[in-house]
Length: 141
Image 1 (cartoon, rainbow, N blue to C red):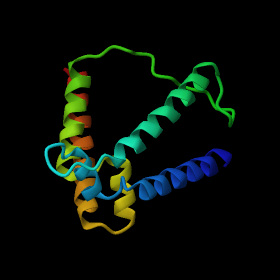
Image 2 (cartoon, rainbow, N blue to C red):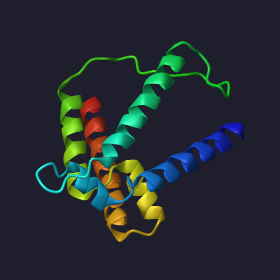
Image 3 (cartoon, rainbow, N blue to C red):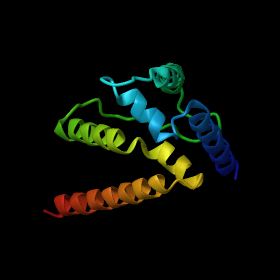
Image 4 (tube, helix red, strand yellow):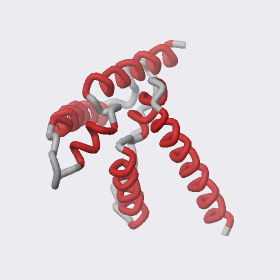
């Protein structure tokens, strides 16, 4: 129960932060990505703040074996950069640039009733399903 409440609270804080920062607004995101046009640098500060928080959070997490709620901390074991990671990052970036959404803001915008977000989330789910099919076929081959 405490895990569910903590997850709900973290999700609410994350969603409110996305709305307050403008990350759930695809026009603002596309303005940030448009380096050749009327570039809007404000999201760089949002990302910088998120990276700064993440650096400290991961530094604390690396020193612990249990979360503050008493659950095991599972840190990524691999630091290997391979073709799949680079290709996935490129696909993520292209999708972000086309739609103006990434997964978190897309879900927040969907909750706010944005039609564009519904299309994005449907495409995201389809992409995840296609990935699962490909992975299962790779594992069985």
